[in-house]
Image 1 (cartoon, rainbow over the protein chains, first blue to last red):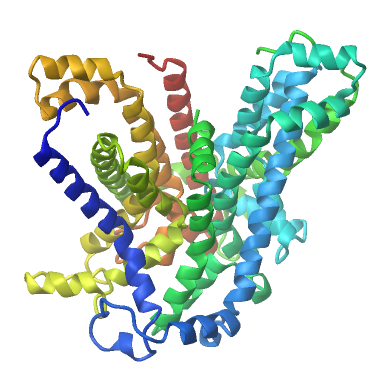
Image 2 (tube, chains in turn brown, blue):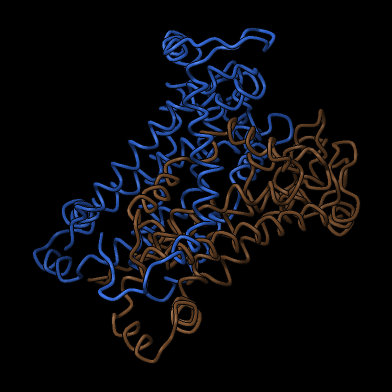
Length: 280
Length: 294
């Protein structure tokens, strides 16, 4: 700020408060709705203040789910989402670290070919090749399994690129010193490269976890067995009922949104770093 | 491509390190993409008994098909609407936060978290607020005499999905705009204000032009987001309706393939989408190569 203008400051705060209010509004309404008694939401409009049935609704959703919508308990769905998100995250990070290591620290035939092969995946989001990918997974008998949910999503050009860029900035002397001291590729990877990449790994972890947690179309197609329902698609099932039980749906929405939101709030710096670097 | 001056000796090891990534890419990316290309040239008869090679007929049909052309224009409206709304709101918020000193990080924290909400959930949240019978917004709209109903009115439904998609994307755009604003040298702004330029004039003549690399980058990212990442919003709320008014291309691939079981047409649509993604990615990369530094 270059000059002091009290009215401008006042105006700026007003704009921001309205902005924040608009951003928070849908979630606030969800929280309010999730604390109402079952019949309350059928009568006219939603109240603007929280009701007193919060604990009941959340307990019911957590323990038994909505059986009329074929939706399992939220505890199970949250666990499924967690397993899927972690499998995708850890899988992506490990295979990307390995392949970036190979591309930067080795010279071999077809190096460029492999580099481009990985690069191409950047251009093929699941949504656009959905039917043939589904057929492949069905042929491999991976429907209704965590393997089918996670493995097809773990190839990641973005993470490979990020690690490649980062490895390129590591001084040559590191490798020279390690080689002089007789370290082999594995020792170099484990004792030098990994410790140096910790921040990058953590930042990507945050982004990938959110990506994995929020998967929607893929679990929708791959799993028909309620035991594998993830929370995001479970909610869709509940809303497509004839008369959705909004108080329970909204309790599930809040529970589904909470883990990734907490990740962002508590790891905001890593999140911002991960976000801005994956897009370079 | 650049490499390190000194490397480890080759042999089989690099291939082993690359193997997991390459195998997954081949099985789940390259092979299905090839299948989509191949199927786009075939047509199955109504009972799935016979497939015939029809060349580019599937593509030709798509471009004669009214519902596909409709889906294209719907996608354009949706992508432009989402990009415009979320970018302009984000720019307004970012440039306002940027002038704050003490409350800077508080506002940032309050604005970034919607990034974590799944598109499908964003859809459900807005669907609920706009629910014609119990939602709060239709209630308020009724007081000013507007009868909101996204179950019958195509334009209401479109506005609903645009709002949901834009809402979720504001935090992303906000962070990038804020980073862009912070990299603008303060001296330029000081010089302008000494010359008597008002804050609004400074914004349009100095800040906005200097932000143009960020703006352009975000435009591409937002269009990609609106075209490909918003499947959940559509599927969890309007399901393409009413009367196909929110049937965006990505949703149509799914609906024609899985619900309509028209594999040839769906594969042809996949191929068209892949061409669009490739084009957008190339634009993005060319732009990054020539990124202007101040």
